[in-house]
Length: 59
Image 1 (cartoon, rainbow, N blue to C red):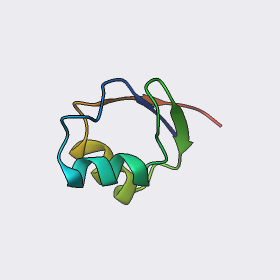
Image 2: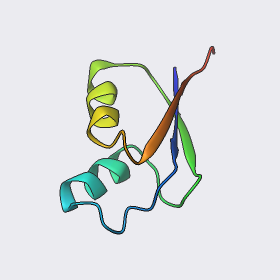
Image 3: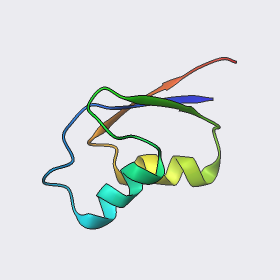
Image 4: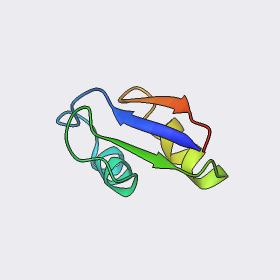
């Protein structure tokens, strides 16, 4: 499981990056979601890695 936290504003992010953040379920700064560690989620996180913080979480 991955804990993904939005750490930087998405104001100057591209439209594609904003949609990716929305797809991860993040809305406001410091909001977080605990998501499954799948290749699709990893790809989304890599796309916006400069805006989010990722931690491994044991279930």
